[in-house]
Length: 515
Image 1 (cartoon, rainbow, N blue to C red):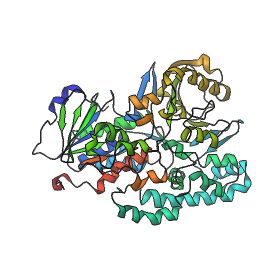
Image 2: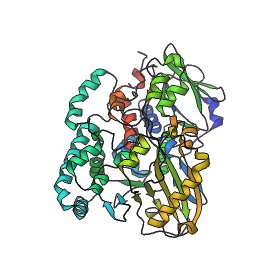
Image 3: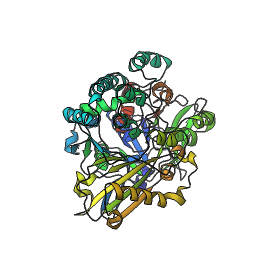
């Protein structure tokens, strides 16, 4: 198993410029940061990864308690080829370190009236599910999937790993945006093709997985449906943390240190160039380039002095529209619920109105919808024998809601428990033997996310592509960004693509020189 290192090795890091290969410091060890570290190392750079938390992973942190393993963040792998590329860069195969298992079905979507839709990777089975709900919508469903495939080609294949740096990049992308009719919301796009209210939910919910409001995000995100149909939905045996451990192992073999428990308090800037970082204890690490996998808005606002940010000023950052946050209840049961699938959406009575409460009114409503994750349906080793590991995730407003989560977290958990017990987990109260709660305060305090937003800036059209914080900083030379807050956005494919986008603008180490 790969190991990560902590404080003692900090003394070995460069505190002054070196004549060796250029040194890159990566802030944060989420998927984006680790992928960037692998790509920079494969180009010949010296790389150091700094992580605030006690273990690597960032939003993909792993909680372990009472014999249960809980993935803190992403649980769905939809573009395995982006991961396989990283292993290939290191001369290895991902299958040597990580076992991916396809999901059947991808998700079960349960409606408030008790009916459910099994969202499957089998085209015939999914078409049959559409017909079961509304036979007249089958042709419209087929047309929607054709449009989604076009959005995949135009939006993901052609634009996903492009580093938008100039107005010319934006102008070059406009024809694709027009072909996708990207000014529409994905919900509006779905409604053009489907009449059944439930099917409209089934085909439009995907942006919620990356922090987007289906009523607002561009219809380009219909590409997710095509991405899933092309490559499937997978789970990593051992949990998402197994992917993080595999990437850390690759870095360990490449001689790259992942230093945990080291929080960056400031990015050092001289003559408009990033040249190092300062840690919370005052120690400084010098570098030729900085890559931030931390929350982009928080990086600009809290790690870079205002005089170095003519573009990303505090006012501009504060005016941004940010994604929702999350309430997550992690729990283990002393029995198994074998009739519950791996991925399940448990929808409340409202869809559009609830989304408006969360994203526009920033109001914590009494009703909610849930994503229920039961990884032990696929990997029983994530819980003690005869037990189940779960998490129940509820999208909630970010901290602008003013909700006192210190006070209300337990009552909200009880409400979630009650819904689960009444709908899919009978007798739950008596079966829970391990419990942990995460609120928007966790995203603010532990993950340094502005407003406690779980996915950074909301991926609306005017906060996407060229309009999103660029992969190469607009304000500070030799500063780069990967992760959910930069282009192309959140989700494992998005953050891996953000690291891939740097390939087009970062030369091999031997040809590197300051502009």
